[in-house]
Length: 140
Image (cartoon, rainbow, N blue to C red; front, top):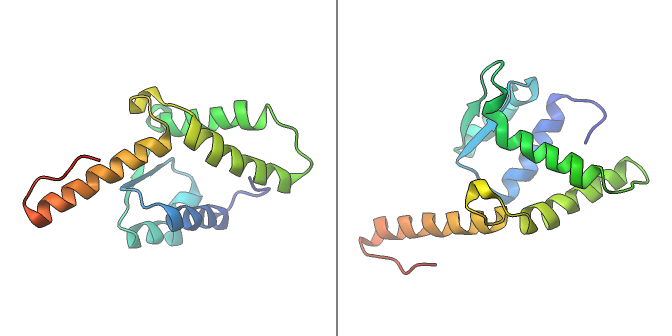
């Protein structure tokens, strides 16, 4: 939510995201903000693989497009805002409290994104434990 789309906005968002999560893959469209040297360098430093959709292949961004639709329909369209600062605060709350912790996703097998991430972290921890100790782990 910014008045101007430039490289600094994407970099700020990425820095905030990486402060809390480290994905295996970062997928985006071919926007200049995602191809900026500082942006891609930050991803590489975090050992995140970079994936970019091909030109004219909107279907490759299906999950991101669906998220944007949900934000517009449920976050923006259903709430009243006083000003730009209020929009940013309310959408942040919507994404964290509503979308991440309450919206189930059929494409993930019906957990919320937070539950799916917890399950993924558990599997990663078990895999690491198995490789380090050469023994079976207790299921999460």
